[in-house]
Length: 253
Image 1 (cartoon, helix red, strand yellow):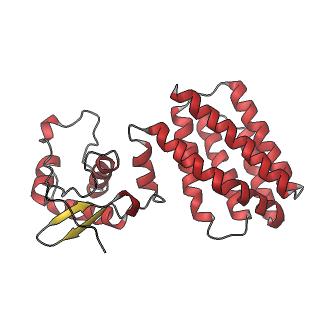
Image 2 (tube, rainbow, N blue to C red; image 1 turned 30 degrees about the horizontal axis):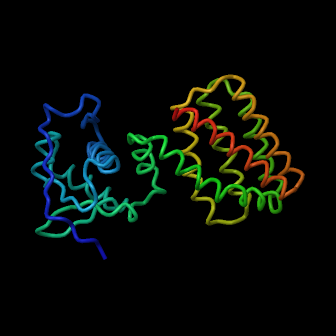
Image 3 (spheres, rainbow, N blue to C red; image 1 turned 135 degrees about the horizontal axis):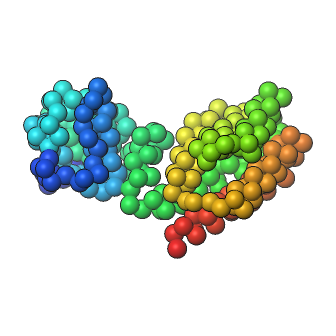
């Protein structure tokens, strides 16, 4: 059952006074860009839970878009459980605990919020809960094909020509481990791992020595899985996560 919205109606600033870094609402997928702009404003707290949002007419004025684009954008945000709607009331922001935080867009907006380090710490806590046991399971259950995928991702990390390529390989490494765990419920959680790694590397500059240490830690994880040593694999992941925690802490100083 949807939560009851508050009576407060938030009206937005006119287009001319929008932030200079706001999304430009134009192009073929106007409704997608509009959903992204509104979604970001919701996640960063511009519209607190319970807030009744501007109506279609107001959104069209703010962003100079069609009503159909507004309707599609609102539908997208409702599908992500950020909004609920009712006739004669309009759309309102749902409580945070209703939001689909496994959605790629919602995670992206979350990571772009002012408390970026807080977001990364939250995801890291989740990784501490999930990844050590998932890796131990992978060491027990992985197939030869899955092991080859993990090893290839590790190889690609070490030979990446750019930070972007390295991050992509790093993500493949961790997601491959989730798949090798043999538990289908763990696989969708790869989107959290991907988001954490992508935003961590975007916002944290790493020196060559840090990259080398991270590579060695990943190599140890791969070795433990390959040798099918669950306890060692579990501990190897904990060391990697502790290293990432240190990076986030240094960034926050």
